[in-house]
Each structure stands twice: as C-alpha cells, then as structure tokens.
Length: 484
Image 1 (cartoon, rainbow, N blue to C red):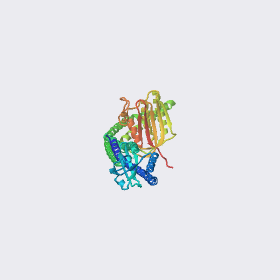
Image 2 (image 1 turned 180 degrees about the vertical axis):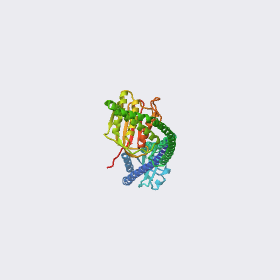
Image 3 (image 1 turned 120 degrees about the horizontal axis):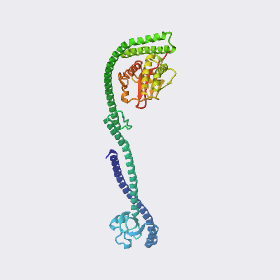
Image 4 (image 1 turned 30 degrees about the vertical axis):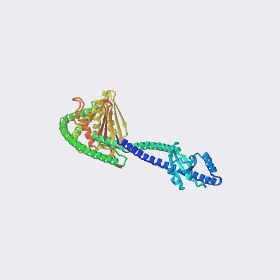
C-alpha cells in the first residue's frame, strides 16, 4: 500500500477514535444536564404546589388539599401525587420508590431518584410539604425519561452524522494532501531515478515543495548537474581526441593534396601557357572573325582561371594566411551563373537568383567564384531535366558556430531540387577525396577546397539535404564594413 492511503487510514482511524470519546462525553453531559433540568423543573413545580397545598390544608383541611393536587395533575403533563413518607401511610399515597430511599425526606430534604416501576424509566422527585397533621408528606412528581432517551438517541445520531461527514472530509482532504504533498513528489523522484538510470541527465525536477522531499529533489538535481558536467567534460575530451585524430588525418590528406597540386601545377603549367599563347595569337590575327576573337578571349579567361585555381589549391594545401580582399557577392553570383549557364542548359536545369542588391563580403572575387561555381556545378550534376537551381543572397547578424562571435554575415544559398543526400553522406561531403560520383567524374577535392577557402575567411558552410527533396549549401561569409 502506498503512503497516501496509509496516511489517510491512520488519520481516519484517529478521527473516529477521538470522535467516539467526544460522543460518549457529550452523551454523558447531556444526560446529566437533562436530569438536572428535569429535577429543577419538578422541584419548582413541587415547591409551588406544596405552598398551595400547605395553605389549603390549613384553611380547608386535608381533602381540599388532596383535591388541589389532583387538579394540578390534570393540568400538567406529569404525574403529580401526594405521598406519605411514614410507614403507616395508606396504599394510595405510598411512594413508588422504596421507603428506604426516602430517609432524607423525613428530615425535610428534597429527594430525587430514577426507577423503573413498570412504566419505563422514570425520574421521581419528592418535595416535602409541611402540614397541620404533622404527617411526613411530600409532593411526588414523576417525569418519564422517554423524552430523555429520545433526545439522547437523536443527539447520538446527529453527532455520528456529523462525525461521518467529518471523517469523509478528513479522508478526502488527507488523500488529496497526501497525494499532492507526498504521492506526487515521490512519483517525480521515482521517475527522475528511472531517467537517471536510462542516462537521461537533462531532466530536472525543480520541485516546488520546501520540505524534506524538496531537499531530496534538490540534491538529485544537483547530482544530475554534476553528472551532466562530468559527461560534458568526457564528451569534450572525446571530441578533442577525435578532432586531434581528424587533424592528423587531415594533415596527411593535405600532404597528399600538396604533392598532387605541385604535380598538377608542374604538369599543367606549360600546356596552359601554350593554350593561352595560341589564343592570344588567334585574337591578334587580323583575318579572324569577331566570333573567333570572342572565343579566343573566353579561352584566355578560362586558362587564367585554371591557373588561379591551381594556385589556390596550392594555397589550400599550405593553408597560409589569406590576403585581405573583398568583393560584391551579388556580382560574383551573377558572373558565376553566366559561367555555368551552358552546363545548366545542356542538362535542362533552370537558373534563378534572388536577394539584396549588393552584399560586400570579406573574400576575393576569384576565390568566392570558385566556391560558388563548385557548388553550382555539383548541384546541376545532381539535378535532372526540369529541375531548378536557385541562388539566394541575404545579409543578417549571426553567431559563428565555432568561435561564438556575433557579427553581420552574408549568406549565399545554393539550393537545388535534385536527388538529395543521405545523412551519412552529408557528414563527409567536405572530406578531401570523398566523392559519390563515378570514377573519372570527380576527384573529391572541390568541396574540400571550397570549405577551406570559406573557413580561412572566417566563415562556414551549412548543408541541408534530404533524399529525394534536394540539397541546399549555404555559404556564410563576414560582411565587409567600410569606415566613414
């Protein structure tokens, strides 16, 4: 049995016991009071009638006095008789109680007693009356006790009704208080203990009571805080160790990237210079058409861009301090869309932009274009015909997830409606050499380089993707502020 029912039963038992004693005391007191009132009433009646009898006896004789008593009995609801307390009295005036109990009456004292002479329990009051015949006479007033018994039974019934109501109220109140003050806090403590057993340490009791159970709840909350702190320290130490291992692995990858980038720069440098030189010769030839000149200019720009990408790849591998530069993110977005538009048209992907009119960011034009082009081309390749690629530019104050610094950031979202990525793929998208493309279609360096560029500029990249519902890469870069 739980505490609240036990407590309720104990209180109810105590209330019943106390009320039983109170009822017994009340009945005894009421009985004595009723008897005193009856005796006093009978005495007053007897004395008043006794004075009249004495005067009538003296003036008109014994018969007139007895007749007066009979008339009085007819007017009253009680039995009133003249009795002879001497041993030689006749039978009609003999007391209904034994003469042995009327000794004080012969001495002129009042006598009252309770007796049962066949008509039920009756209170007999004897008031001595002096008379000229010197007879030990008295007025006998018989008061039936039936009214008293009915009164006492009614009193007892009323008291027990009140007791029953009181017991019910006490039981309900005790049950409610026991459930609220004991049952509910204990239930919370049990649930908290089970939560701690399951390892859920973020739940707190915050018990409103300020008793012993409240103190126990506060101690349990403090224990949870300490366990949570210990778990946080352990998780932080584990995260630090994992980060250290990842940094070692990343350093190893960067070494590989650096070696590969050096080889690429060495192997592609001369061919790119040759292509750029021939494009310049074609552009300077007087016999070529304007269309050929424009194509040679495109070739030259792209050769320059490839050279710059190789240089940035080397910079990413060395991870040196980036040069201070800034650009307009809106212009970079526009130029990037112009650059990837042929690829989008070939795959049937629609391009669109939206956002602010200008958004200066702390990043170089070429490196930001490299980041956005990488993201846009990946999005186009992940989208099917009829899909949409949208670039949104916005400015707002944010808090850096790593440093906690709050400042104005420019957010550039690259959202596609393609196939999306699974959560395990999202976790690894920025790892060097990790790719989901087929062999020969990607090296796995594009997103790693993009992440490195953004990270060096004090920003970060968020990824939101669901299989079948597309992917959104959001680049956050510090907004450039100009002094007045």
